[in-house]
Image (cartoon, one colour):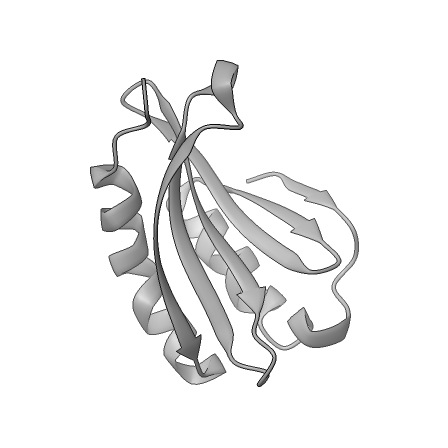
Length: 106
């Protein structure tokens, strides 16, 4: 697992340890930005990821992503919103399946 970018802080401090462990257990990278976390992996010729952002109400919004490295601006996505911190870990496995099922635009 590779952890990239900023430190654990702010609204992600509570879930960063879980995300780190999840990434390690599933052979993923964890990218960290001020306003997002993204679990990333490569399979079947596509980059894939789970994007986690904080909603205005403090819940977590997830989006399953798939994109071609050469066309990172074009990607497929399917999301879920309003997740409480306790529910986050329960839906990550489902999000992997969704991301693995997406096809990037041609």
